[in-house]
Length: 280
Image 1 (tube, rainbow, N blue to C red):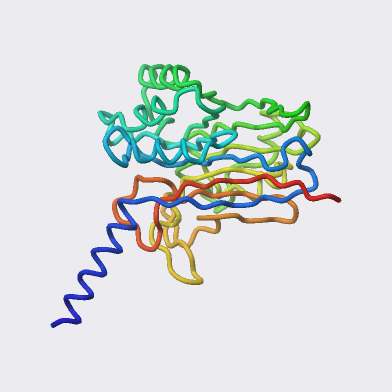
Image 2 (tube, rainbow, N blue to C red):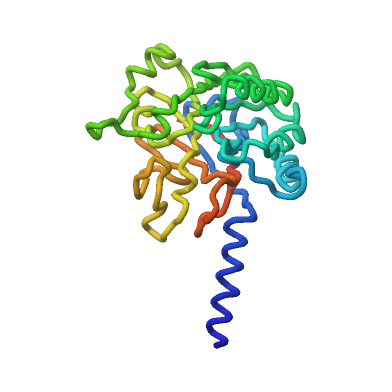
């Protein structure tokens, strides 16, 4: 009987930790292409909040972000939840850190699903909080007279819900990125793109470092195997959580900071990505 009670208590504790608290993890990205002026540059990566909250007014999340004091914040979509449109937890979050840090945002599938009027209001909220909304555009981040090109990839719903077409072929192609942005810019490049399952395409195009979310870490994670389920209704997603590399290209996939009703060994997490220049 004592064993059963212990198992119940431990299970309840794990459930609470995995679904109602968050952690912070630092990831180092090392490259000889990173400009000297960006050595040590710290990026806070936030994804898939889905209108979740930590404390009244999201004060616990706000406090942690202020403690981390990043050089920039990258939001990679699904910060709201169209299934719970009345909640304002994301708005309270960004108002709590309004204009404190340079911040950049790309849509996820939930922002893509907003009506025209709601999208207009949502973009207005981002603008008031000092967040740059990127829709298929590239901008320069400048520091100490050096620059990094940041791409913001707007992925339509067909590329968020269905990674493969009816013939089992990956939907997004390098040619489409060339059509949208032209040939890759020289120097170190970064990209915000909600769906990480096209990492091979991003790498082929030439993006050095991509930031993504969408997969929620695979929801349930198992040792060695990793994430179990992807939002596109496939099992064992290739890219679900953490840092992945393909030759000299990299992607950081956030497990999200909320939005899943039942996480198992998959705690909501803020990533702090630190850029480190490797001398060639």
